[in-house]
Amino acid sequence: MLETERLLLRRPSPADAEAVRELVSDPVAMAFIGGVHPDSDPSLVVQRWLERWEENGCGPFSVLRRCDGRWLGRVGVLVWDRRTWTQGSFSSAAEFAQPELGWALVREHWGRGYATEAARAARAWAYRELGPRRLVSLIAPANTRSAAVAERLGARPRETVTLFDSGAAVVWEHPPPPPPPAPPPPAGRDALATKTQPSRHGGCHRDGTVTRGDGRAMRRLARPDRLSQLALEPGR
Image 1 (cartoon, one colour):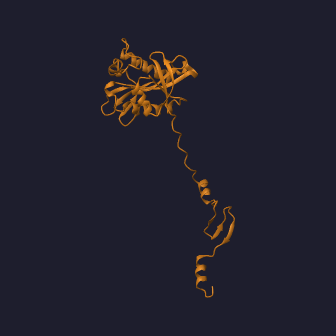
Image 2 (cartoon, one colour; image 1 turned 135 degrees about the vertical axis):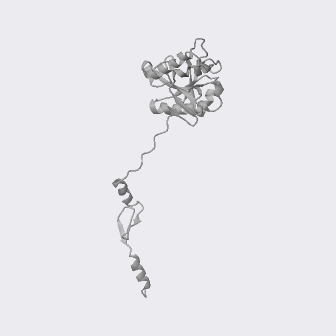
Image 3 (cartoon, helix red, strand yellow; image 1 turned 90 degrees about the vertical axis):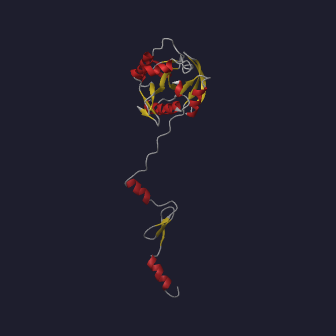
């Protein structure tokens, strides 16, 4: 399960079917992702999502609102075969497999930033768990709302392809994950040795020795008490 400020993302459950019906039966929400199919049984839709998880180790997450548990839609990673641009699996598509970050929300919940928030969390999970060389979102040219989400996620439009079920789609390429943080400096004896090495600019040490930049002693300073004594002696 993934958590964000307002959302929970978890694997789908057969109990989601009734909530899923509101999404898959809406011709507006489904316009750019294959449309509404008259025989789309929401129970079978959920079953297909679960099969994708079993086959690929990834698939759609159900998106829930944390404050009340309301089912808002789905977001997650699908696998496409680039040879035919049909949905497939990592095993069947092999080197032609292309992971896609996709999202679809019930229309009632549009315009509140939920899609961007859920997709950002799913993308971080995908990079962490799947490690894809390239992660994309496939968006119809006329789907300006999803294009705006992709842009907010930092994705950039590249080539255009033709999907088997919905026609032309712009390939939005997501930025790679940030590099891991640098390791902490060495501790223990190595750190102590570093601290005690002479500066390349030279320096003054406790015993009064002044070193040059190459570390060689130049001369020894008088002790502070000797300096005071010299200052008090007449004729000096």
